[in-house]
Length: 225
Image (cartoon, rainbow, N blue to C red; front, side, top):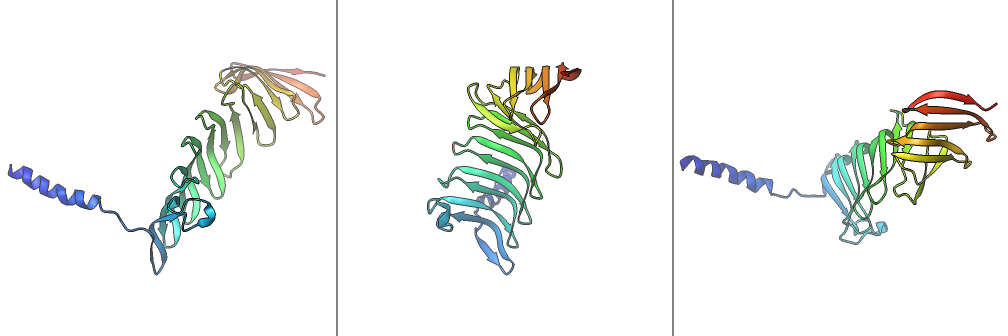
């Protein structure tokens, strides 16, 4: 029993201190420090209720550092969770719809998206996946229509806009370019053309060639003239 009493005595101080709330919105000679919360009353132009949260996070020497959270107009629902380094957005981030569903997630570095950016419909379905290089240049894009009766537009690559209607990541699709000409058609697998054709046009919209793909790989080139 003596050991048990000693253990409990050691635990109580720990529990007591772990439940203490640290002060917020503190300043010293170097500026804002620690955890800060901005409410609607602090930023009336935000349109958020007076006691609702606008954003919160950490300061170090008057500069944002670490994780920051921004809120929707209700002042309760999270709109964005992101990281700051020396007062600049840097690192992983997530955005959310007003219903709390994840809207996008990606990585931000030096004012650019890097790595892979995922975008979602408010139902939770993936609508777009964009791959960036370390300088923020788009390398590749996959697009998904969240519902069979919906259409979305995205880029593939960054200089070409395509419209996808009733797109099935695993199934037969016909994809059109910005001039409403067939660009890809056939069987898709995980959003990628698996067995089918890619139509290549010149700047005037004249069909130049047809690329045949099998098992996800280029197979044959058909010239049209």
